Length: 127
Image 1 (cartoon, one colour):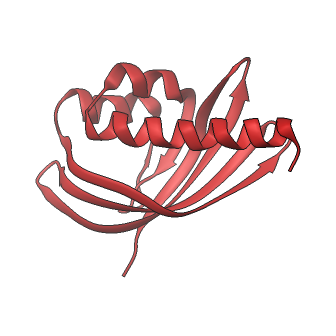
Image 2: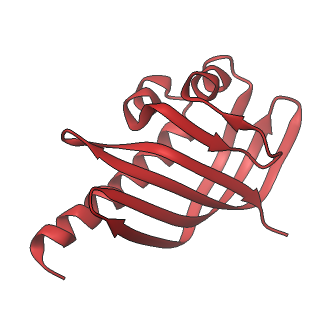
């Protein structure tokens, strides 16, 4: 792997770590930086949400994560887009629903000027 590719992969790994930390800490400002304005993300119940809906869930306190970790991360690049497949283990609450399990997450990152931003994704409960 050449130096440029390695730097790019490291940037995505760092961005993935930052988004998990921001989710756990309900850091709406950091999430706002990492998520593209035109985000579409499908949550485990099949609903597709926008950036505004996602940020409001954290801002309102309806999403509370007490533990979060990632494993089995795979990253593929297509020009200035990165597709990340990862298993997220999470505990907390989403509205009144208990979160305690593993989720298969796909996140699509796009290089926008000089920053990587999530433009799309989905999350499914692993059984």
